[in-house]
Image (cartoon, helix red, strand yellow):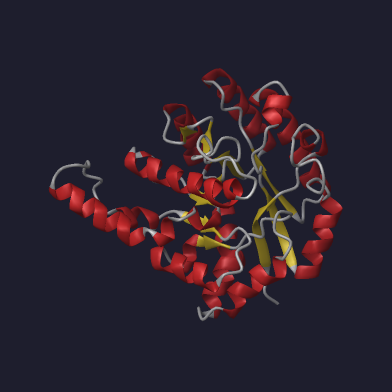
Length: 305
C-alpha cells in the first residue's frame, strides 16, 4: 500500500488560535484531523504555521513563538507516530531571534516554518541569515508559507477573496524572486527551501523570467545572476498545497523534476484532500515519481537532520 505523507497541514494550538481573527474555529482539532488522515490513508502530517495576527494579540513574536512551539510540541508528543512538528521563530529583532533559535533547538523540531515576508520585509533581509546558518548546520529544511498579514498588493487592494487567492501566492513568488536576486540561494546552497502553492505563479512565468533576464543582460539593465532564473527554480522544493489540478502539476514539472515536489493537503483550508491525492495518482508520471511526491521527498528531507 502506498504510504502518504502530508507535507502541508495545520493544527494551531488552541491558546494561539483564540488570539487570531480568523483561525478560532476548526483549526485546532487534532482528533478531527487524525480521523481525516485515517480516511484518506495519510500516515503522517507535517504541522505548519499558517501565519496570522496572533503576534499582535499576544504582545509580539517572542510570546507567540514560545506559546506556539510549546503547543505544537505537545500535540506531536501526544501523537508522535502521526504528526511532525515545524516550529516558528521570533523574527522581530536579532536578540529575540537568537533566543528563539536556542529554544527551537531544545524542542528538536525537524522543520522551520517561515512566512514569505514579515511586515513587507522578504527573506533576503540580513536578519534571516542566522536562520539559514542554523538550518544549514542542522541540515533541516525551511518551509515558506504565504504571508497573510499585509501580503504584496494589499496596500492597493484589500478584498476577502482576491487577497487570499492572488496576493498570498504572489507574496510567495516575490519571496523566491528576492532570494534569487539577492544571491541568498547562492550564499546558502545547502539549505533546502520548500515553497507552498507550487511557488505561486513562478511555474507560469518561467519562460518570461528567462527571456526577460537574457534581454536585460544584453543591455546590462540587470546584474549577472550566474545562470538563468529557471536554473535556480530547479533546485528548490514546491508543495502542492491541496491543488487538484493536473495542469498545475505538469506546469511545475516543466520547472523542476518530481524529486522536488511534495504533496500537501493544506488541511483544514482545503476540504477535498482526496481529490488532491487523486490528482497525483491520475497523472501520467511514473509510479516511482508518484511515490516521491506523495511521501519519499519529504521523508528524504526529514532524514537529513
